[in-house]
Length: 432
Image 1 (cartoon, one colour):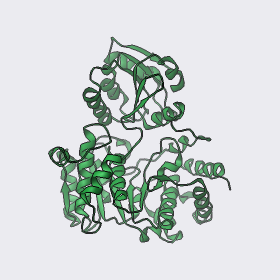
Image 2 (cartoon, rainbow, N blue to C red):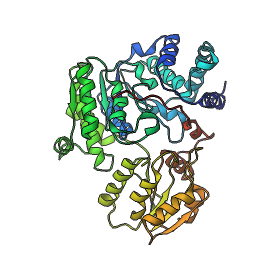
Image 3 (cartoon, helix red, strand yellow):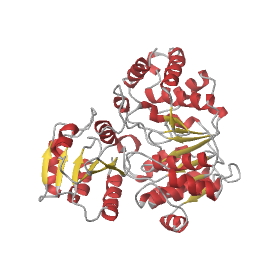
């Protein structure tokens, strides 16, 4: 099997869609030898900030000398981004090896209960991390938590970044219902650390933690300001990253007796952490600046708006916007359109893309003074803004991934971004 053939096999699994529940993942992991039992985890759920928090935890523990696995999703460009050890992408040869091992195991499932793409990849990651003898795995949920394939592990700590509205069709239409799904990663006696601040959501997390006799640590904005003020330099831009950093530091403190980390390790980890596609500033040879940010929901759009106001307050901006149809794209347009003098709306490379014409109309309503154009593609939009000094590309992580490819920042030989595509049958949210 070649690497392109392995990717094609994974594309075939994607066509099975996504479903929620742990039965298949438990069975597949057992067939693979239960690699999760050889590993230690920090399990991270939440609406926004999961990836950044995971990246900070990974960077700090790696600075402390640990061999650290990192499992995240979606990927921006390459499937290999999802599975990393010490921030090195899983080699193509290892993807081939793991897919080869997985194929006969998948045949042991009936056709109507076949593991999905994410279930198979979750077990592939577990096997790889065990084979690599990782000291610790930073383990991000895919969607929700309670019924997410990643929830077959018992971690050292459970982390919930925040609770906002997103994926309501699968997680529930209130913050309490969404919080119940995210709080599903809390295990009996395992400490939980959260930066959730919505009272309705925080109440649910508190109830679940109490019911499972799990120590609960709540991190606030004040904690972020006091913990980071003049002490640690953070390489990731944006005020919101301070809260993510404080959450990571609180987690490290809770686990200090199990995994000692020095102040020097923390400082080195925070100063060197990278997380592409989140307020990532690119300066082209011409001097043109492009800011890439995967603000894919309303909460993310508000964070981007705040960051632009503080980091680039006097800049004349061009906005390239592409959003998925199942997001609250009208509100995202209302949030971001007033920030730009020129706006190009584009389709996202996804079956679920919002229509650029509809996005343009919503942007005109929100900012009647801007020049607004609906484009056929991101490539088309990039060709029209070559003379613009400062451009923001946002609205979807899928769009940011496409931009990284088109700008030559992350070239790949085959299209792997399509592996992010999925459909699912709405599941019954945890009862409240």
